Image (cartoon, rainbow, N blue to C red; front, side, top):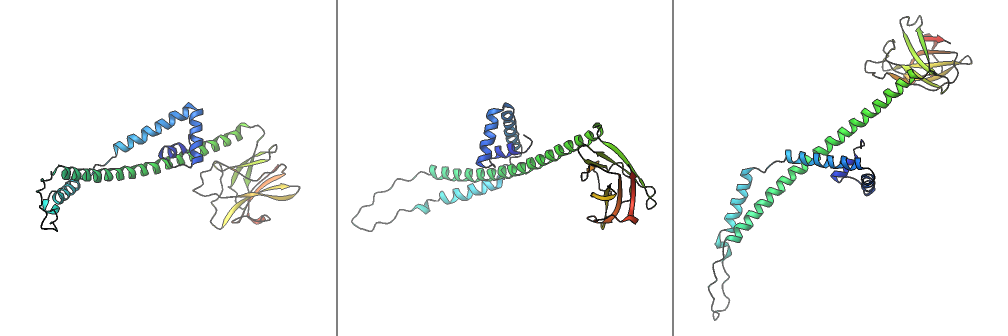
Length: 266
């Protein structure tokens, strides 16, 4: 119901397989049927609200032109007889009723075509708006799931909060990571981080000291545009210490020791 396929189904913009899938869900779940009916009513209300009548001048111009041409009997002169010995019977004067009726029908067809074109444009705009709304709903759902995952870090007692302090290179720097040795997860608390902003040519790189050797746990940025609360890094089960260095963008194989920003021995 949040994927946007119901709106596409109502608009007829689905594949045969998707149509069968939706109809199966409608038959199995009454709530899906209710949602489809609501989408149909919403689109109908939208079409009625934004329907555009054809311009009055356009209709009058079509009627006047058509009636003038069809109402002129000179356009319907009987053919002359090719044989002098054939006596032509006087034809009855044809009535103009059908001419005017045809002209009116033609004008009505033009007006209906114009109205249908306008409604089709409105439906296309509605379709785009529905797709955009569906995309926003999906993004919102992903954000909610991310928040739930971040909250689970603080609820899970298996996580250890490790607070890294600044080095002489950056004495005011500080950051915290949440580390779960059980499932090997490592999360950086981006919201509480106090680190200088890195430029476009450099990134911060997180290291774990395992058996006296540095192990890469991934790179991250500290920028004004960063709105992430928690960032998951590479996994590690054992660690004697955690440290962060400033490296060329993309990270390094080995840490640049004179660019170490924060560290915490465990």
